[in-house]
Length: 264
Image (cartoon, one colour):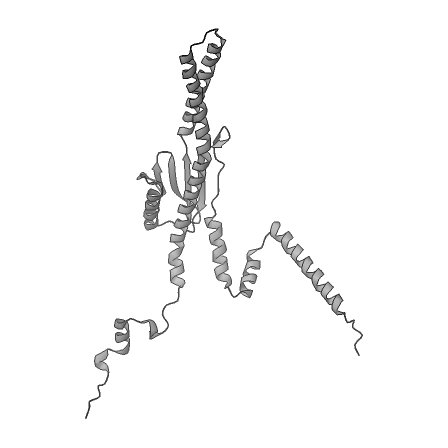
């Protein structure tokens, strides 16, 4: 008879409960700190029936699509510029460049201008730029734009605000201020406050919208570049069940080659 210890039902439940808690704690510690390596992702995918090659390609695409965000320029703590940098998954062909320009024009509703300088290609519309530049592995796509009217809008608003406040103070110092001038200067102050407040309200929304548009254009560009490779991996027809009539006729040798049975 074996001398190996046997555990009771209560002890078994306690052992499994503590082991599950320890494993969950270790998983959370890794997820919040180091994350998972590609090999670990492939092992998990393999257990789920996913080929490691496809996980590696998906991981590579994640690194290419994720845009880098250079620090935006700010004015009074508000964003007045937006920029994005995306590493493309290879060289950008002329066809893909043309489709990128079409996407830019449709997204920003502007024709823009196309410029070339050697291997550099640029689409520009005012302060909005999209630049494709060569890298060691292919091409890099850069976006940048600047809200040029923001500083002018703030400056004009502050001008009205300061002028109105100064004249209001001077009029209030008089023993008999003119009511008409008081109203006009009050309107100056209101215009200054309203203009500055409206600009401050619009700038974050403008920056978020430009970021969303740039990210979407970059994602579509990468998708177009990776689509041909995915199409090549797609399996073709393996039987005659999916052949059209013309293909079926040629496959069987045509109707004329089939024997005809005559009735007697």
